[in-house]
Image (tube, rainbow, N blue to C red):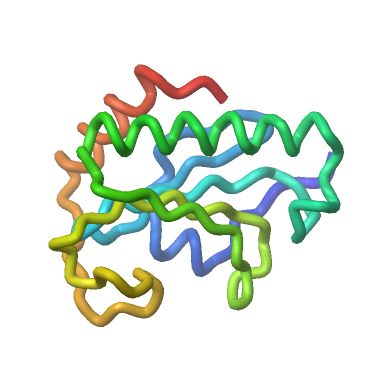
Amino acid sequence: MKKFNLDPRLDDDCFILSESDQFLVLLMNNSLVPWFILVPKTDKTELYELDDALHTQIFSVTRQLSEFIKNEFQADKLNVAAIGNIVQQMHIHVVGRYQSDPYWPGVVWGGAEKKTYDSDEVNNIKLALNKVLVI
């Protein structure tokens, strides 16, 4: 089996919260919004290219992340997207949004405002997520 390598841009911008044989779950290092990224360990770049089993698993984990964000962070809205124009490695953003966040109602990508997490915040999110996440 080919070794999986996380895109360097994701590696630089995120914390790894959870890993399985099929997925990585990342946290974007910007505490202004709860921004998680699901990275399937595949060389495919488009959702339609996936076999049915992996496609189903991706949407199951995306649903779990969405429920976690709504419950843990009380987000007003969820943004879920698999865009991949710059980072072509398949990844799915699951972002909790608030009408009061600095990016609202626009997109979070490329926003100038940023507040990094401290290590305790990351550890607390990781512990809470791994209590409910099944990957």
